[in-house]
Structure formats: structure tokens, C-alpha cells
Length: 119
Image (tube, rainbow, N blue to C red; front, side, top):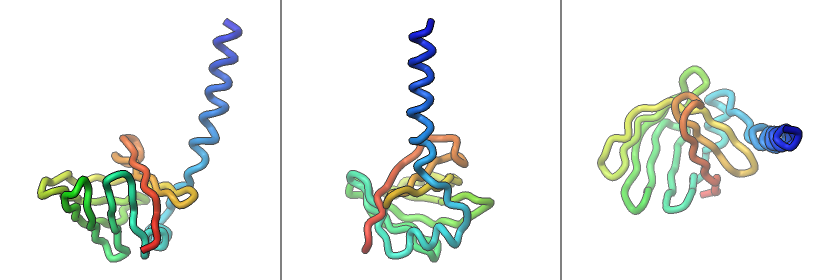
């Protein structure tokens, strides 16, 4: 019983700093400043998210395109990949050390981390 408690306590203590590392992007102006002049990259994906509200790039060699706007503290996007509609989704955005994290369904779904590279 004591061993379980110690393991649980250590797990919680180690998880908290990981959650705190990414800072939430609070508003559209901050988001635009972060993505301006940057390419968002992850393996086999390169995207440009313009401050003007467009998304373009490639994912697994197929084109990615779409539009975005900022609504009530969330990045909301309509996205197409290789001609297929991925749909509309509002996402929580967080940043840390040259990385940006998008978490679907207003921060309650899956997340994707991208590196922020200067163009």
C-alpha cells in the first residue's frame, strides 16, 4: 500500500511540471506574433499559418490548405488535406521553447506539437 502511494505521488509530481511547461496563448495578437514568418514543422508536415488567416503547406506530400480565425480564446480552423475536408475545429494553443501545441476540441481532444522554424 505504501509503495503504491509513493509511486502515485511521484507520478503526479513528475507530471505537473510537464503540464506547466507549455504556456497558453491568450489572444489573437499573441498568436499572430508567434506564427508570423514561421513554418510549423513535424515529421512529414510543413505548414504556414499566416497572420492574415490562411493555412498552407504539405502533409505527407499532399497539399494542406485552409482558413483560421480566433474565437473566444481558441484557434478555429477549417482544413483540407489532399483535397479531403478535415472539418472545422476550435483548438487550444500553447507554446514553449520554439514549439507550438494545438489541442483539438477546445483543449479536450488530441494534441499535435510543431516546431516553429524561421522562414
